[in-house]
Length: 187
Image (cartoon, rainbow, N blue to C red; front, side, top):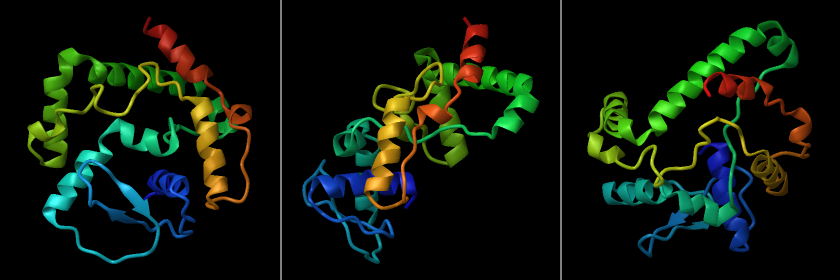
């Protein structure tokens, strides 16, 4: 499992009073429909199709992760300062294009086409994606600005769970000027 997912399940395990497995392995108890309890220990298992469907339903519920560890910010764009300084104009142009794309996907008028794109990419039926880019999906800021307070909590949690040795001040290393400049161009 990815470290971001391990953080979410590890956070759920901590709330349940368990010590997280440092390898990030977790077993899932699906005995109650609609409820996912994380018990941490290593397992080898083959998932039945109906269990995969239950997992799919639970993990796409934006409340699941929020209930386990609170608001999260796990996806960030990062680059070193010398690269940003050298390529700033191109990065602002790229971010403007990215903002335009995100806003297109978030626009309810484009939902049918967005589900068809997801279906083509994943080779799954479009009906399976009726939830994407809606209030049933995870929140996406239309200006693509990260929630730095949530990111700080997530960074601190990875330290508390033992995934990293130290935390750091997220805001000290954040520069939102590129995405802010790109957003101004689209107003």
